[in-house]
Length: 152
Length: 180
Image (tube, rainbow over all chains, first blue to last red; front, side, top):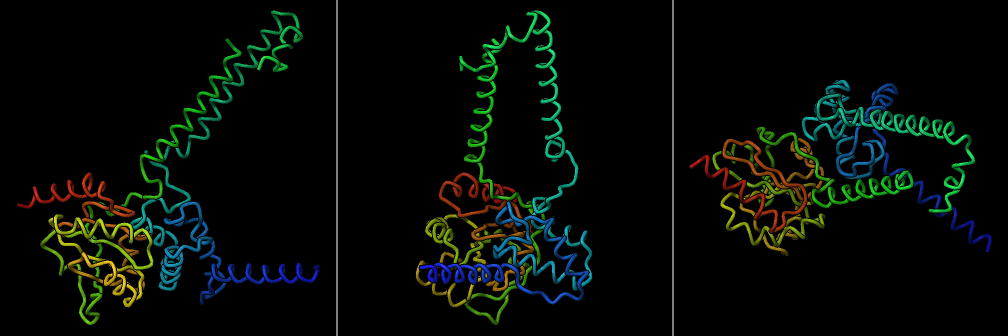
């Protein structure tokens, strides 16, 4: 029984290794620095097909094609900005995980800050109200039944 | 009154989630708006599917508007779209160009022999390199290109009879109005 389990586990491990090897095919980089640059760049670009994966992670056919294209452009001496422009011209700013700040993206950039400010104001109002309540009723005990949540 | 505050908070969340569901059912969240819309189509020069020794280029197709339909035999959605193309192609009023995407030519020919061939022109992009210039990221995709070679309309995903009637045909009609 234990042997069968062990054999199953080993088979799984081998297949997991195969699946991983499939996702990342070796590329003949000119040097290690270029390989690092490639990895860094593809991790900041979004796969247009699978949307929530980076070009580096995705195993979609188009992600593989675009990785190959980026590799080719790097061999021809294109810098990161040129490669980004190339992709944006074809697949729109959607492919950038770091979209530029402009009128269409200000909500994306400042939305979280906006929510934080609204939340902070709400918290401040609640605290002020409670501290006033403590003053008026002469203690926290007066409000205790509500806080127990019995009536919910 | 203050007891109702969590309830209103809950209602607000329900409204937000409801909006999310409505918004995503109304438009396809996986369709990325193409930056190529109303811009000249990229130059291409691809072999014809049936006569691989001859090529078809963008210049060859200038003069008359055409619908470039990206398809492949391996693409399941293309099988859904195919009957619609078969039925609508004769009444579209534009040339239907089949763009065979990352497909083995033998598979593509077998697929067309089995399902029928609605295309007047068929080109093959086996490597998918030219398709990157078109911003193609999956099949099927369709581009309406006018006589001057400008992309006027793009649809991502299968063309359904609804899409043909509500989007494609009006776009073609608009083209025909400006070039009598």
